[in-house]
Length: 125
Length: 469
Image (cartoon, rainbow over all chains, first blue to last red; front, top):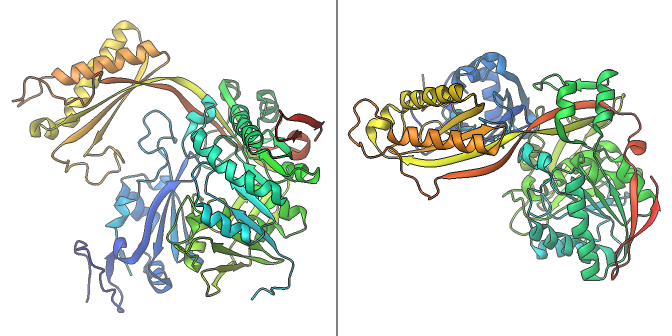
């Protein structure tokens, strides 16, 4: 079985036509970003390379609240929603902020640099 | 395909935020399309609560004036209406006054005569308290319940205005409408809605145009975009040869800064994009169809409030010692305990925070690589206290304690920190927090947010034309 769970080496992984295989999100997406959605929530957007990749990752069932929570070291309850949006070949993950934007102790007022752990997240595709 | 003979309404969006700038060549291409409206968003809550709370703008005055000069100089003589929302960044009274003063300056300097409509978005504390008591405040997911104490402590409260108060200004013949805090898509949709266009495509187009070329590819926050609204859809076009719209860039933008990409709540209802189609028309434009607006009473606006919570003093320092880097968590914990003991003895109250860049400064606890720090660390000490003197004291004590702390295995006994500056401690101003971010069942928005109308005559100071709504 073709598997791609080795570290990303800078070139795109060939995505197997045979499932199940896995790949890091970084190899599957053209955009991986985070941003505030209001002061109390953070949204993580992953825009996939194409509709086919989007459909395979969605069908793979690997992007769940539990997986995101474990990857970010958060309680599952802080993952508020996961929305799959086919017109943009994208998935959006909504996290509750543990510190309100701009409150003392906040580390990222705009929430624009909370995406990095997603880059290496291995998902079935 | 959209029938080109259908009635159309063309909107020029110069830039993502007034003051972010735009190339004049792009703007001229937009003017050549004879737009029916030039609209621009001037604010956001993204920069945090300080700006709303303190009354200051997060955009630069000279940059805002430059953008406004070009927009007004070209729009007014051509009779193109102009709409500006979330004036001054946070859109409260001081921000609106700041932006209005710039409009008057430009009008005088460029000798422009027009009827100006100004809509304030401030909501009195008593109004919010009354709404709270009568059950007309709703909590948004993730936000705490609103309390009377939080309302009373707020130094500024604004509502994100819907299109209705701006429409009232246009209906009374205003050529330029300047609004306080406003729901961004409504600033773009106000005039086309007044002309009878469907709110679904009008608001969805506004949602894209409010960020100007951020939704194009390659994206830019400082370039112009042209939107053409028709009966049941719209097209968006970049105005620089450097970028185009693609179906994906346009669709992806509907995700931006929103919790749900397909259902977007706003004043008076929600935008439903579940059946939306994004089609490239082959010339760098994208046609969007199927955007629907579902009106949902009661009419609600989003309230934003900020309260002052103290003063901040910070110190920035570097650490290049491998022994200290290895033990940094324990060292900072001991320093924190030491400072806490001092505060207890002196009966002082303060909050102390460390950010350790090169380790977990950006993400904190969720950082998966926090146990593999870099060869050097940037350490930020933050002290927040009710008053300036206490914040200074706590920052200073933390800095000196960390500088000379004798941790286990220490070889470098002359000092633990590399300070880039003298003085090392930096007073970082007042600290504000968001106190209100709730929905308000407000009643008639046109009655609540009346338009103040002024006649700008060009050379002289403006005169109040009518004091009406």
